[in-house]
Image: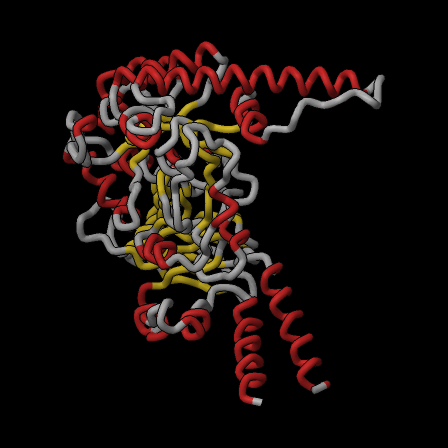
Length: 457
């Protein structure tokens, strides 16, 4: 009995250690590849060194520190890890559809590091994504920018440390269909969506003013009573202050113009319109406001309000100086964003640099993380995708995906690892053993062995 109590104590300690373990940045040398920096041109037959998760050197003839892993990228193309500005991977349910305004909820509170879609995204060279609330609400919940660190047990490992806060808004049919028709709850119309937003901002402004007044008063009067705490209004007050970036589901040009007017009235200066299928109609207005656009390459007409768009949308927006990205909104398309970006060379004749920017530096700007990722520059995070051909070629196949200097996907190695083909639902232990991503995997292997021993004895 004492032996089992001791063993259980060790088991609990190991589990606690694993849950608290942090992803350690790696050191890695990539040699002899064609470096596509996206922002500073290309360098052929060059090397790139990542030390402790950061890019420290780019050039020829670099040497690896002792013990560092080396990848020979001869004949390959090395580019920044692909970034998806609109995704729903790593979360199970995307809509808190109980109210037209749910700014108090947060996607980051319910991340799933074992979602197989993360691994599939890595297999497509995608290393970062924006895990978003759905579009059932005029004002939805807060979203979470994540790095694709697949296979851990700690959801915190997915969060991109220090990434700006974002929130999901939605226009048009989605919020009116979910809340208005048959429920007797505003909004039922497109004009109702606008008023839900205006009323929410006005309430948030009044709440923030009351809080500020209380904080000033309590300094001289410790018995002063605070306003009733409201996390929803607190979040919206942060939106008004510019502390949270708006990403808004949108299709029609008239509604896009409407929301920009609302933002002007409340002093909001930063907004990214998602989907924005009719953005080409109002590209100059988007540019003048400073709004950005995250679009589909050639996806529309899947419901009535989005029957009108064009495959030239991304190119038109880009030529009008709108910061534009191409997103997936799909667990499938997230693996093919380099193909989606390539379509803009057929529809719009964008240059290689312009097309690659749509899936790298531009989505990084939209998420407020461009000082860390989105291009290959000294001091940026070691998030890399390596292809066997130019990534805009229809023949290109991703070979490696690297996050913070750690190889998270290796096509040749992973193809030989039979454990990765195990169904995680049917065989959890084998799946967990297959993670082999971070140092604490060995800890978890010991946990399973100890559990088996305890059950058998």
